Length: 277
Image (tube, rainbow, N blue to C red):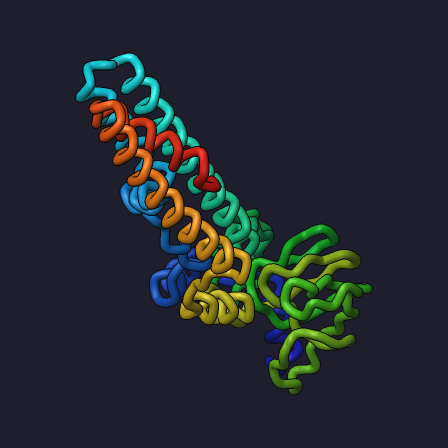
C-alpha cells in the first residue's frame, strides 16, 4: 500500500475506539487547565482591608457597645451586602473566563471506527481524523489531508483580521507557525469561515499553539495597572487625613462634652465622609 492509499484508508476509517482511549490515557484530555481561583475567604480578606469597610465595622462595634442594636445591625447588614456583591462579581468574572477557556475545547466531528461521530472536544486525541466545515471551531492543531475552498480566521493567534486560505498537505511540508495563505495546517481555537476539509490531529491540549500561549500566561505575574497604583496612593493619603481628623474630632468632642463614645462615632462618621470608595 503506497502513501496515498494509506492516507485515504486513514481518512475513511480513522482511529478505533480502543486506540482513541489508549491515546487519551497517554496524552490526557484536549483542554487547557483551569485558571487558579481565589477562594471566598481570600476575596473577603481583600475586600476587608479597605479603609471604608474597617470604619463601618468599627462603627458597628461602637454602636453595639452603646446599646444601639438597631444602628449596629444596619451597619453590619451594609457590610454583609457589600461583601456578598463583591464575591458574586468575582465569581461571575471567573465564570466568564471559564467560558473563554471552553473555546479551546469545542465539540468536534471525527471519524472513529469508520463512522462519523460528534464528540466533546476534550476527547479528541492525536491522529484523530476530524471533519471541518464552515462555522466550526478547530478543536486541535491538525494537518489538512483534503479541503475544498477552505478559509480560516486565525486572528485569535495572529491578530490578523482577514481569514487565510488553506491547502491540502503534500506529505513533505513541515509544521509552521500560524499566519499566511496556502498552509496545510489548522490550529486549535481558530474559526472556519468558508469551505470544508478533512484533517489529522497533530497536537492536543497544552501542546497546541493555543495551549503554548496559555502555558506562557500561567507564568505571568499579575501586576497593578497605573490607575490602580495612583488610586491606591490617593486612598492612602485620604485615609491618613481622615484618621488624623477622626482622632482630632474624638479628642475635641471628648474634652468639650465629656462623651468619649459619641466622640468616637462622630470621628468615624467624619472619616467615612472623607474617604473615597
